Structures are given as C-alpha cells and as structure tokens.
Image 1 (cartoon, helix red, strand yellow):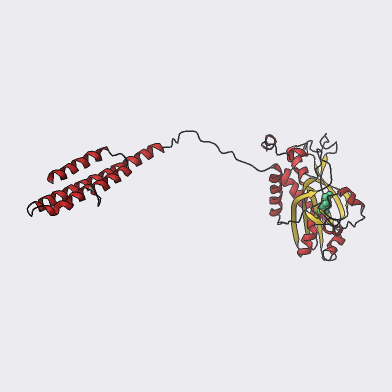
Image 2 (image 1 turned 45 degrees about the horizontal axis):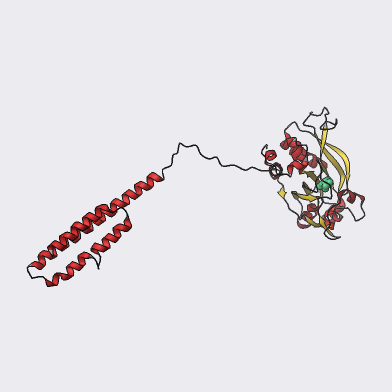
Length: 339
Ligand code: DAH
C-alpha cells in the first residue's frame, strides 16, 4: 500500500510538471484528490490494515495529499501569472505610433450663419419663435393685410393643400401667431423654411429660408428699426458696414422700406456685383401696419412696432461670395468643405 501511495505521488508530480492550462490542472486535481480520485480509492482500503500499519499509512497518505494539494495550488498560481503576463504582452499599445485623426464634421454655411444671426438677436434680448410651414391662408395673407384679391399675392404664388391651407410663402405669418399669443412687449425673430412656386435657377428655389423679426411695444419708432438692423449688419459684416433704406411697399407695414447694405465688393464705388449701385438689397422692413396690430387684438393707438424679413440664402451668398444658390442645396462635400 505504501508503494501504491508513493506511485501516486510520483505520477502526480510528473504530470503536474507537464500541465499548461487551468482546465487540465483541474482535471488532474479531480483525478488524484477528488472523492472518486486515486488517493481516496487507496484510503478506502485502509480498513484491511493491521492496527500498527494503519497510522503509518494514514500519516503517509495525509502527507502525500497535502503535498499534492500544495503543488496543485502552486501550479495554479504559476499558470495565472503566466496568463496575465501573456495578456500584457499581447495588449501592449505603442503610444508612439501615429493616431488616426477622426474626421470632424462641421456646420453647413446656412446653419452657421443662421446660428450667428440668432446669437446676435438673442444678445439684443430677442426670443426665437417658431411657426408652422403648413399654414392657413389667414396667417400667411389675410391677417397680414393681403385680402383674397390683393395683387401682391401674385408675386407669392405657392403650393396649396386646400383652398384654405398652403405652404407658407413668408415667415411673416409667425408675426400673427406671436401677436395672438403674447402681450407686448414682444421681441422675437423667427427663422424657417418658406415655399414659392418658383423654378430653380441661380437665385431662385421653391424652398428657401427667411428670418422674420418683430418688435411691438409702446413708443417703438423707425429709429429702433434702423438701429437694430444697423447693429445686425455691423455684427455680420464688420463695423464698416452701412445700411440704407429705400421707400417701398409691403401690405403689412406702413411705412415700408427695402434695406440695402454697402457693397462689400467695392465699398460703395459701384461694381458688377452691385450693378453699379454701391449698395446691395438685403431685406424688407417697416412699421407694423395698424390693421395688422388690430387683427391680433393689439390696440394700435397704444402700441406700435417694427418688422423685417430677410432671406437667409441671400445673406449667406453675400457673406461667402457664392454666386449660385443651388450650391447650397446640393450637399457636395467638395463645396461644403471650403467653409
Ligand atoms: N415677407 C416679406 C417677403 O417675403 C419680407 C418682409 C418685408 C417681411 C417687410 C417683413 C416686413 O416683416 O416688414 O417678401
């Protein structure tokens, strides 16, 4: 029996030295030390031993069991250390290798300028208002003092959903929504998409963008309008920028004006870009018509206001010297990456 035990010890040590992974080690542990293991099998035969032999063999068996257990746990520790060493080696990062630069996106020039204008107005205490693109005739025309047979409607032909519902032709419709829902003082701008039944060319698109402005309070005058627009243009185009107002007609403002800015190309001398004028037209504006205020339940005897509407495409094109509006919509990266 002593020999059998020593044989087991030898075999266990021999096999242990060859083991290379934790699963094999566990199998070996079970085979030698487990309940149905080789050592247990021998110990079960101890009943047949004499009283003198039993403690001797018992001691030997215990020592061998302890030794094998120790060797197994040493081996386990060794395998674990080797594995983590290997992992460290495999996962080593060479921090001196050049990195892969991520491709950064950027804002479309239309969005960039839109946000710039929003920031300028927020700085002057304006809120941003929104209105629907699918609009009632009333908000797009009638409440703005354009009754059904008004000739100015011809210049703003649009897409009709029903006789009464259309795609808005101007952000001026938002003026009405805002005045219906808020009491003065009102100071808002409203950027958004507008629609007209125009054919596409270098300066026209059936979908384009406007930014509407509206201020209503006691004692608002044309001077407030000029001051606000002058500030806007100086922030957008630089301190040398000057504006000029020309009399014009819009049904929803009285008096009305078209607002020009000094031509950045020639500084006012006259060139091909401003067609010899020295100024380029940028937007429409005026004092809110008393009828429009009254349509929204605001007493024109107490309150007055100014409004303006500018075409975003035109501003972006002027700012970057873009001569064809279609470039703004084609999403050609070769074009967009220049900004
Ligand atoms: N809605 C006008 C257009 O689309 C632009 C405009 C002119 C807006 C004068 C205004 C304004 O608010 O006062 O042509």
